[in-house]
Image 1 (cartoon, rainbow, N blue to C red):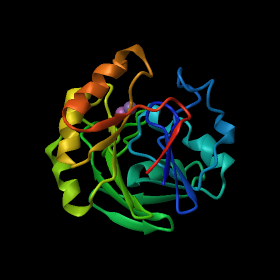
Image 2: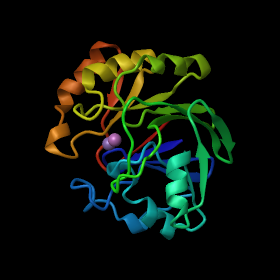
Image 3: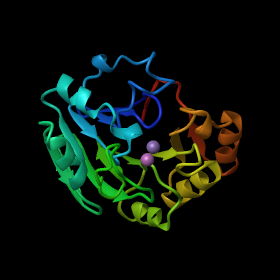
Image 4: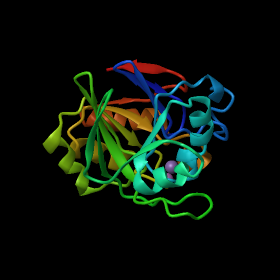
Length: 227
Ligand code: NI
Ligand code: MN
C-alpha cells in the first residue's frame, strides 16, 4: 500500500490497483496549490471524513475529472454531492463495507461537520482501511476520544494517520495518547502547517513520539511512504 501526502488532510492511497483520494483540499491550500496539480490527480474513490471546506473543497473537481470515481462518505455528504451528479456510497458510524480494494469501517471522530453554505454535514468520521493485508486508521479531524480504544479490538493497525496541528484538532501530546489508544507505533501526522494557526515544531513533535517509543512520519508535500 502506497500513501502519498498531498498537504493538510489530503492523502492519496494506492492499494489493490485502486487509487483512493482522501479529503481533497488542494486548489486553495496555501502550501500545496503550487506543488500539486489537481488536474493530474487520478482517483477511483474519493473518501471524505466530514463536510468542512478544508476537506471537501476539491471533491467536485476531482469527481468531474474522474467520471468513473465514487464518493465514500456519510449519508449526508453523499446526499449533498449527489445533487451535483456525483455517484456515492453512503455509510454511517460503526458500519463496514467490502469494496473492490478492501474493507472500510467508519469510526467516530470528535469534531463538527457542516458545509460552507451551512448545510448539515452529518457527524464527522474517521475510517479504518484494510487492504492487501495492511490496516490503516485515518482519524479525520478529531480531538482525543476514548472511542479510539475500540479500534484495536477489531484490527491490528500498521499505520495511524493522526491530526497533530492543534487548535481545530488534537495537538501533539493528545496525538501521542491517541496512538496508544489505537495501539499504533507508526504515525503519519497531518492537518498541520497549512496556516500559522496550526503550525508545529517538527523536531518537538518527532521527539514527543520518540519518547513514547513511536515513530512520527512528517512527509513533505507529494512524498510517498509504502507500508
Ligand atoms: Ni474540520
Ligand atoms: Mn480540518
